[in-house]
Length: 167
Ligand code: K2U
Ligand code: ZN
Image (cartoon, rainbow, N blue to C red; front, side, top):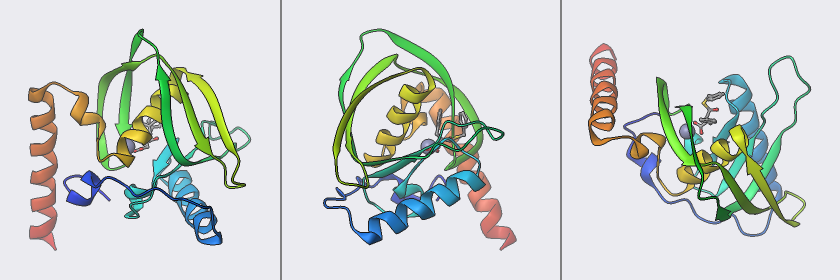
């Protein structure tokens, strides 16, 4: 789903116990993510308001390394913050610098149902924070200055209107 679709602002429901349906959804999300291509995807971006995230930082010529995060949450974030250019599959062709905590600790359940807590930094920390934002209806443009954010939203509302006229 693309901006300005209001469903992107939903707070997603916890997945709870992993079922075959959860695994099927994770597989769909990974297909969508690899097609985009992207390095992360939250279920809401394909219209399912569930707290499920898929990530794969592997470059296109590297061995794929998909990670599925069920009901992920950030349990700690560093004082140090870092700026990273971010994009979003729901806000195509729009990239801006976003400042976020440089290192985080996060907890999630795997598709096998085990609970894991890990630390992340660099692009992985950026991506996990970006995806967990999606689960809470927050998008990276919400971290920008009001001026930049309003410019981005106007740009997408114009594009959405143009599409409606062409349709
Ligand atoms: O949630 C999404 O829209 C997927 C993003 C995740 C992401 C955004 C910013 C920084 C890291 C990850 C897509 O992967 S956007 C495409 C992309 C690919 C590589 C690096 C940055 C953005
Ligand atoms: Zn995004």
